[in-house]
Image (tube, rainbow over all chains, first blue to last red; front, side, top):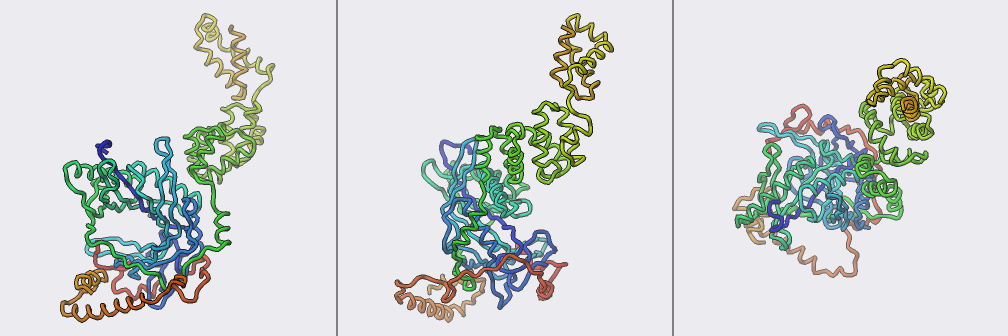
Length: 476
Length: 92
């Protein structure tokens, strides 16, 4: 924003989240990405005459679950309506959606912007069916209806965001939430999370301006870039004394700018009316009780808790808390008595490196939480030092055995016997007279070399602190 | 019904309206709208609003998929195919 003291900018998002279910929302066709075109279609999702929709209960549960996680008022009765428009990816010429009575309203989501928590209000959450997919090729378009009728949750925020960066953060947070809840993979590349945005700029203090809708935002980066582009563009128009035209614009990723898609003078008239083929949905005590069992601690709450109660750093909490499975794994290791900061350091360091190498998640790797804790216990007991611990860690991945067993089998237990160590130190001093002379003459540089020689002679097992102490004793 | 409204409605419904049809259709549509007006006169204050006369319980389906055995038959109805895609004039 070029003139932050002169203008206010407002951004609201409409985020579509594809729900992961076995079947589509109103028919038994498979809900799966990547299948051969037009294989998961039937008379219901293709809108053939005489077919009737029937509501998928899991889609309903998952939709309510997200609304609950977003602190919405949950509708005790919600209604499906027909949204009428003509487009080739919509075979019925209407989309079954929600309008007058969406399943969730008046919610909020917290995001953290530059270390400060910002609350963004959620206007509503409603469930609808997705449309098909089109590929435009030359003078024809190719249509695939596999996605038609898959459950799609639309989340509409209030225009509480001010900049592209905040919108990007919100999308990331929402992605974490739906993944934590296990209702969607939140994958923007594959289109399972999609976003449209409304942007307006107005003179400071004058409230919302005339809004422009931006579409085609298929990555969180494009959301940020396009919104900031729009804020600048609208600011410039106002600065030049002009008026912003209310219109829909498309993000053009090749030119890094938004371009006009259509102007809104022929305002959308979707002629909504209640879907006569579907009765209203009413929540029951059982339905609500089931939601209670499925709700989880939200990702932001969890990150805050990890930092405040377990003493790990913000960055570590972000890495560990990104995926629920990882955070669960982390806390599982702690249940075996390990210390939070130590586990976090290992988990985000050496363990992560090994996982990257093997392409596994922590939970599916040979390093079970129990083994992880055991490795740290061996260190805490003074049986191994850090470098050996790293060796054992690699061997756990390689041999799929417990750290203690590996330590015994490979003879890696730390050498704490001072008699034995003293012998090694004496031998090294005899073998390296030049270094010894140098040190005695006041040049301490070769100290590290001698230290290394002793470690080598012990097969890496000598306790470094003891070696250092002995060398100092000998060389004064 | 106002003629401009009729044209807008036709446009939204993707119906091409000949000028000759406007007069007769305008009258018919007005009649239908008038009927709704008549229904609005009935007092329903004491009734719970509902979209369905009989169904009071949820009608839900368990989330299990069934193989789409009719997919090929449905595709056969399409006048133009490319592999398994349905071909239409470019709408972009």
